[in-house]
Length: 103
Image (cartoon, rainbow, N blue to C red; front, side, top):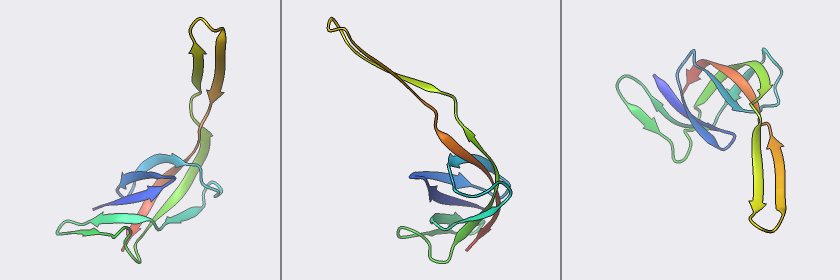
């Protein structure tokens, strides 16, 4: 059994027990969060698809940690014009573990 959820503008395929990094949530470590943007649920015998989301379906996950990803560098330049700009970015994320899929 798996579900396809949407959070932070991205879609994820999750099963019970999966650990994944998603866009940062405003929940404390150890708290349970309910992700209600469930696009599809697949069981052994059938698949239920939402239009665009399934009513009454949700995924319950436990927040394990918050963190920041490795720094990426953005470097812009224009040749022969002495134009150079260097910028760094670290994306914040939340690590969750899927506890239960309901719906």
